[in-house]
Image 1 (spheres, rainbow, N blue to C red):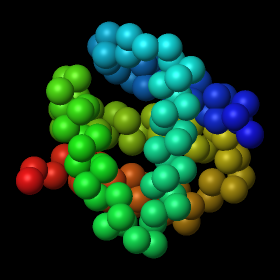
Image 2 (image 1 turned 90 degrees about the horizontal axis):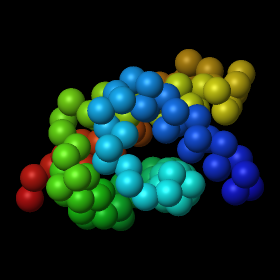
Image 3 (image 1 turned 30 degrees about the horizontal axis):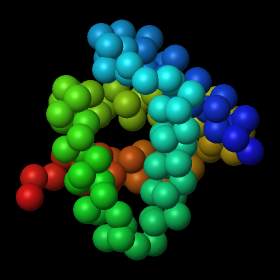
Length: 118
């Protein structure tokens, strides 16, 4: 299963850096580890969709860390585009319009939590 996650993360970061090459400098760590963090967070988010309040604090904290790294509001749509592109590539035909809309809504809710101010 991890190979699938590694491939998805590789696709995601490749797309992210092609859309916004300037963000590459924020990724000093091994991208494999970063990708595993990404796929782990996606898994947690998916498993929390029915009870988003369970991860709201964690998402605000994650957003604060990202802000400290230099992530701003303008980066969230770029991340969304890379994420949806990666999902389309990895899910293939299963990434139909309904699934696309659900992922977009979930991402936007999570992004909103990440950008919330206490």
